[in-house]
Image (cartoon, rainbow, N blue to C red):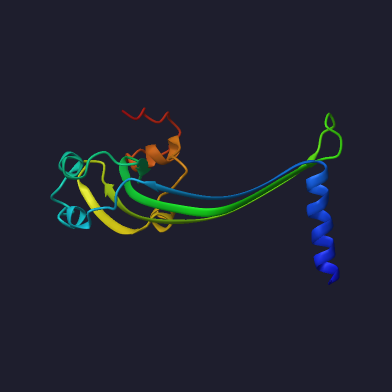
Amino acid sequence: MSFKRLVLLAVIGQFGLNQSCVRLSYVTETVDSPLDEAKFRSLQPGWDNLTTSLDALGAPHHVFEHDVHGVAMLWHHVKESGLGFAASYSVVRAAPGASFSFSESAMEGSGAMLWFGPDLKLVRYELGSVRQLMMRVARIPADAEQIESHAGYRKSGRETPAVR
């Protein structure tokens, strides 16, 4: 018997003799049904607006700020699956023990992102993976200075008018 097998048997034996637990798991999750790409492709940038887009597609999963006064919306379908392993060990029943867990999951998701300008007209849309689409959206909201400069206010010695 090889040394590696002997060590493995000793570890398994210790788990069996003491207060311990070993758990293997496989988890799969599906969020919503696959997207109907034809509905997204039927939308026309410059023509469709927020209302017509929501009528055609329903509620989005995520809404983001876009270009200070605009909106970006994400619709997606996600299939996620993965393996997991967890082990815990305690020498004495009342004493704290050690534990370890690991999970490996693969997220496969397709989505569509729509961008709307300040007038809520559709500017553009894109179909692709959820990860790629999420990277195209600025996560940091605009600060007051960006909002003022976008509205056409310039800094001067006087107070800047409030944004309405």
